[in-house]
Length: 581
Image (cartoon, rainbow, N blue to C red; front, side):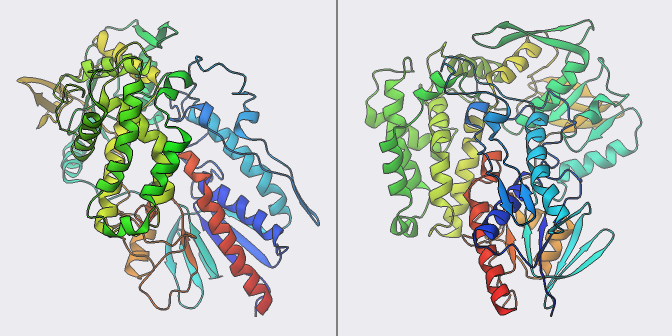
């Protein structure tokens, strides 16, 4: 009999680090931080912050949540026997900002991702150092490629095999998926030519800044019209010029450069629809905020298990949010068609959420040029223009998202309906996960001076030529010699191409909830599997659990209640083991 139990956490970024923090706290609370050894795997070596929050990335990568709501709670000090873990401040204390003392009219701030990474890294190190000294944890900078379960778990990495592991928590983030047909063709095409470049990932941004082929005369196609596109464009634009804010009240800006640049950036997507910025400040954001009673009523409707069981579509969710939207829309200082009855607003809201190509005078037409939509949305986000119903729905949806994620994870809906609910949530992200106003103002500034063209934004065609990608739309064409794919993969488990996931699917250790979705897990994050030998020893937190849970990507979700629930259950397993040994 071994006298200690081994637990492994695979992927020790923000989520893995917070899971460890909770596990240690739970074990100490239960007076059972003994006979345990925890292996922490992180192939990047960036323990606590991970790849997304690298501390040495370019400062033009901003996080997409304003600091005002980035409430990462403090960690209390932990003292037990010889282990002394210091307290660690909340994020707000750490940056030394008291948001209670700020006025609601002050513009929200969006810090560089590297800054948040520094916080996460320091938070992890102050926890890990005393645990390393006490030999409770071991940091392993290796990539886990296989998980096997003969009787105990065996983990294989790119260089070693680790045996006799009792329990595993997977907290891996974005996983590579199988390459799309279009990218495969482009890859073959670009690999034979020295005068053109294809980049298959938007990160790290440094790869573009160090690329000799990217000059002020380049023509850069950017596949995707979302947040990663903005990071890519801002990062490269900063190399050749500067953004200068011309109006602090709206974050409007101009782009100044000494080079003669035309059409440096050519972004495009399947629908050519730009993201809508978040409201400029707390004052405008509060216009869209439901009352506590509205949220409670909404939660009571959507969490009802008999409603969930009977549901044949996400309509029950849409009908629960529509009255909130209608009430909020009518109260806005300025909005389209002010005399519209509440009932009509509800009906339009339902129709639009079911199908965003739905046309109505209260909704920004998808057919209008992207540039026009961006200007309209900026006007709404800064309180300078009347607000369209689609913008309002997106902001209200964002405020309701925590309730949706909480009440509809582990629901009684059919897999098909839940898959549709997740698709519905994804479809609102163009509004609910929108960038800061300043980001869209920067894109408008680039367009204004001809550094970016939006003529090809909507689903263009491509011809592969000796000089690069000939992009065609609206009887115009332009040739790009650089192509950057900024489309991030969806967490569709059956399409994931990472060795560890393919291996676990093949061994029946995990299974997909639905063809379009992720892994089936229970409320404590443990994997549900058809394999009868699979003891509850593998757990999963994060975006690959999208399917039994909803809402997994944001940094606030990494610090959410799911890690706490897992830690409580993992502690119970350890206590049971201690009692039997």
